[in-house]
Image (cartoon, rainbow over all chains, first blue to last red; front, side, top):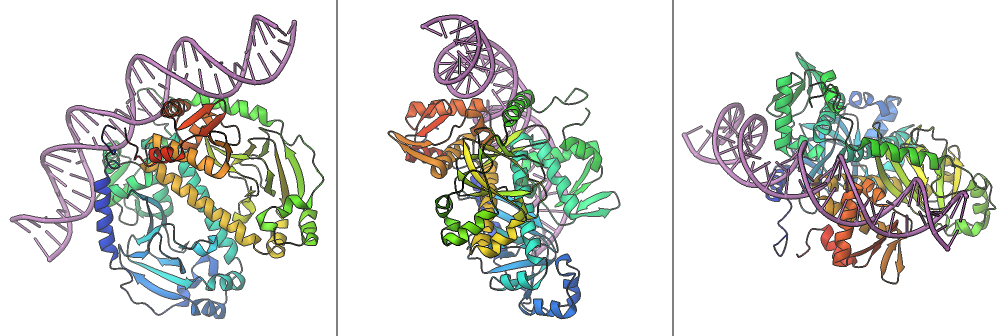
Length: 267
Length: 267
DNA sequence: CGCTGTGTTGAATGCCGTCAACGTCGGTGG
DNA sequence: CCACCGACGTTGACGGCATTCAACACAGCG
């Protein structure tokens, strides 16, 4: 604190660099087929729409726009005017927030069947975060003007949407509690358990996060650095709790990892 | 990590003690006049209801229950079945979350005119946090069954409520970002600025948080300890940025404090 | 085969939590 | 009025843990 201005936020340059990289990747936004043939079965599989008749589904889809998004494409951008809301049909989406200093945080991952970008439901004019395809994705989008129609036309749609928001608020608050009270080790363990619970895929020797995820991503979920994440994952691999890999994490001993998460581990 | 079980969370005993104290204070719950005379003017001053006619206001109030809550009384409790929602007519409410290990976090403060305890809007069966009166308070409450009536009967009520939730989600996410990227000093500065912005009262020599707030409360808002808060407030007092006091904080140099919050301070 | 993105690991610094002790204020009861 | 007590606040000393800095390893790709 002896300089005229304090040095920029720790690691600022690294974050800036990453941000630029991702921005360049994002230039590929909306590269894909803008009006893919819509299949009723895609929709009928979504719980919210399960109760609808074929005819009703057609009406719901008539106002929707389907698009494919390549991996790392940006579906919408933080601060951008929010004109549409989305429903993820397939893939995984990473929701990223960037602070004014350039620090990035992964707010959450969206799984298939979930609504996202529903700024309209909260009376917001802009998206509070960016949505990036973690893998190739397919999503429906509606203009905000369709919100009222869906709410009145699809029984349970409004309730489902507001419950989604409520769940996210609650999860975010729990994250605040975790960051206030837990050690880094526990936070990372909890984060990984949440990932495999919500987006896990069974493999031969455990449960694996079924989209590519880097150490840096995990660090941005838990408020630490990729170094710390790497160190801990290595240590856990030695203990047989997880197995690492390039952009890959496999939990081989979920129970053991849970003990770590709750700080009850022996040793 | 050499013991059989790791030591309990750092400072656990202190938190437990505090929790017990507050629980005892909370035993005074609902001590006050259960059906205070309702005054239309109380309601007409609330923005959401401003557009209503006197007759409509009477209808809104007919389903409501007004109560006074003494300082430190608990209006509802975390985990409790959520049967009502509330509107704060006067006073200030502290919303507190407690983790399973007993660690407490102040989720937010509620100001007059704001809805709180609106679990029903998010399809939640239980309250995710506890609400404690920071000063003597007056609040309206409705049974959950009145939610639909208010939504259909009061223009803008639903939109206002969902916007409130959206704002809180956004604020909570910003808090996650702050805890991920900012130093303790900046977080505390931001928290105090937010307090005086949202609940400030002008005094002779600055802006003061207009409800009693302890160092411990500030620590629970920012995820630190009361020691660190005390140290920093003392340092800031020496620099002329704030003035402290028993359960009191006065900002005397908001601009200077903002420089601290953004880590742009000279020196 | 270089380049870029990703991951690993060692060493050192420093922030901030922890422990501890003391000071101060306000209320309460003798 | 005064002594006592609990709640709240302050300050110093110490040390652990995570960040930071640095260097290297490895995979994929053009």
